[in-house]
Amino acid sequence: MVPDISSLPDTCGVYLFRSDQGTVLYVGKAINIRSRVRSHFSDRANPKEAKLCSETASVDLMVTASELEALVLEDTLIKRYLPRYNVRLKDDKSYPYMVITDEEYPSIIQTRGIRPGSGEHFGPHGDPVAVRRSLRWLRKYFPVRSCRRDMIKPSRPCLEFHLGRCLAPCCGGLAREEYMRAVDGLRRFLSGRSESLVKDLEKEMWRASSEGAYERAALMRDLVQGLERMREGQKVLLVKGGDLDIVHVNGDAKAASVLKVRGGRVVDLLSFFLESEEPLGGGVEDFITRYYSVSGQVPSRIRVDPHLPDDDVRVELQRFLSARSGARIDLRGVRGKDQRALLEMARRNTEMFISRKEREAMGEPVLVQVKERLGLARVPSTIEGFDVSHLAGKGTVASMVQFRLGRPARSNYRRFRIGTEQNDDTASMTEAVSRRLRGLKEREEPFPDLLLIDGGKGQLNAVLKVIGTYEPGDRPEVVSIAKREEEVFLPGKGTPLRLVRSDPALRLLQRVRDESHRFAVSYQRKLRTLDLDLLKGVPGIGNARAKRIMTEFDSLDSVLESGVSGLMERCSLPEGPAHKVIEAILSNRVK
Image 1 (cartoon, rainbow, N blue to C red):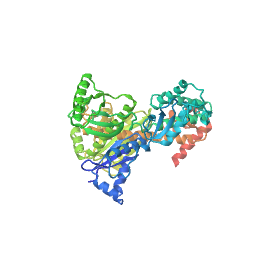
Image 2: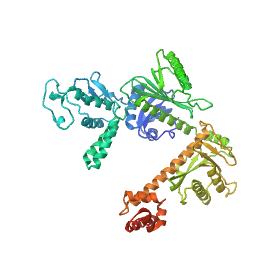
Image 3: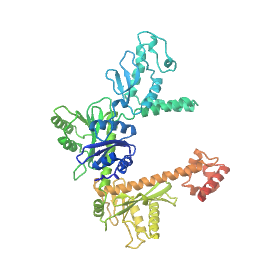
């Protein structure tokens, strides 16, 4: 049976093909997981791919923040599971480290893999070119030697000293305390304890730019970018080592994830739905008790999110876990930069797991639940969601998204420019719904089963007036949902309906609402960008004047209505550029 690929995300990460017994058959990485996995199942001409796909029963995934993180994590998982369809196993030497050597006058060098006894290692890093470049830049600020010279016998300084990238302790005239200050500064930065350096570099970059020293400003910019890129990949492979579990519980959705770190490496991530009639809230202790009662391994450190609310509960859980493992267990909340980065990874994967499972469950069962919860006359096979977006009351647009059988039908999405200049969401929503239904009627297309309005009772009543102008047999049913409390307003009901946050029916309504909001905001931003580009292309109108015009007027239509005199008065434009603006807008309308 081919697993459902449509529910996979289009984000960066690592994916695992598993057999029906749960064995990992293949581990891969991708910038776009959905696209990459789909390519496996479409390449049936390749015998290896065909055999792999025929044996695959499910696809698991782990979302990462960058491709470099995915690269390192893929290597770790291949070493852990030894999947037979991965042709070549990568070795640690694929990833560069920076090492402060263990010498009287330490040097900073780049190595492939860990060399025990050579010094303090920092890494691994995903991009060796970025590491080499960053080392050169770092030594501009921490002039630590990179040579292998003998420090006992004084010698002449080399070119690195004259370039300002070494204090030249080989000359014999430098106090060791002064040299070690540079070494300690470099160590603090590489350990992640000197983020102020990046801020100082950014300040120096802007200062150099304002003084016209553009080459130095570019150097500062490249240094900041190089340092940030150099540190990518460290979230999933930690030099400090140790065993650790990061436990994240989403109480509203009744889901949890456990990120496993063994020997300093992220080796696995497990996600679960939790069976419970009520939201778990902060009940992390319930999940910990249930999970580690059946888990075969309890690490020495467990970090949980959200924090355990009661210290007595934490102590009692520690006793339980210690009894399970036969050793002392350290149980507490997430602390430190590295652990917070791992927690963010666990959170993203929990959210992705929830979203994926919800998409897999979308269909007739959840639509029947929507019908029952909202008291609808029929199962809403087609749901259309509406939302309004504007920027400080200007450039108002509306969106309509359509879900069929619980899934987005993106080819049927629609966008509306709202003609009214008033900052009135209710009037804008009414216009959008009116135009949508009128268009369907003119084309003799069926109305949707349910309209979902983003807003409260006011927006619902306004749309009901529009619906009332059509024949009773044609009218779609209408509900609205308010963001803050997730209250669902129903026609003829004085009090809103409040569903349990984990209710699949509510989650579907939220997904339709969120998708309509995303679509409206993206359209509003796109139009504003196009209008700005048009204005900036007018001779005499630069970036500042274009932004001033867009701030003063709701839209380019408003600019036309105001005319040359309005532009001159409200935007302080000379007559010539004002005429050119009007001509450009009219010319664009003709096109």
